[in-house]
Image (cartoon, rainbow, N blue to C red; front, side, top):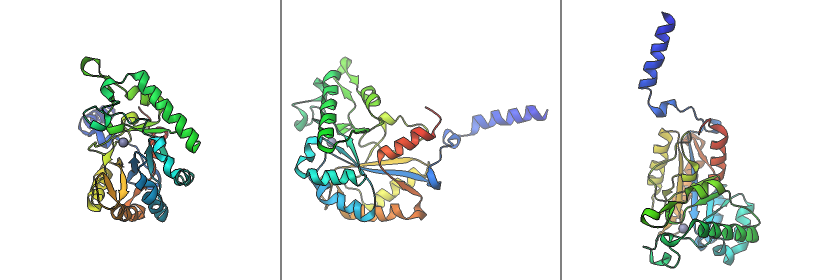
Length: 266
Ligand SMILES: [Zn+2]
């Protein structure tokens, strides 16, 4: 009888326990939330303003580069890689939808998977040539994950899943659930134009679920177009470093690697 009631309690539990409560995933050292700061396109402002800022706070970020864009400040980029920042791939030619005028010469709508792989190979070769390293994570240019049109559209997520530990999206609206996330479609939340209060609120929301929030920005500068502000980042880095806030701030690769090692499935 006792045994049966234990079974029925278990069954009742299985019905009532929400999915999030079944997650047993734990961040290291009792941290409540993981956060990555990532920046795309190897913009000049990242080299001129970003690396010093992160050095002042002893923080690491992930930079998704189109390798040839690093050439003008290549010494700074070499130093950034040596200091432990992650240098990820953002492809060679940055293909996006042809609806963007800048992308019309090389639009996703006209690409094939073979051409896309060739583009990724060129980026790999240039990254090896310029920094002597291989990217382990990727950011989808414009956050787009398809090639082709209409009935001939194909996802290129499987290509990224084969080649990289993680692929980061853009302008997604949520943090990642470490026990569930498909790392090839890791969500990325736009940090450009955010205030410190907005960044803090996004982290607090992610912490409620023990999530992994990946910010994705472009310029690191004074307020402007596609810019995560220097002053906002200064304040955010001070906040993220305070042990009272329970934040694990690290690169996309470091956190994705931890997730792969510490979850049972998938
Ligand atoms: Zn980009």
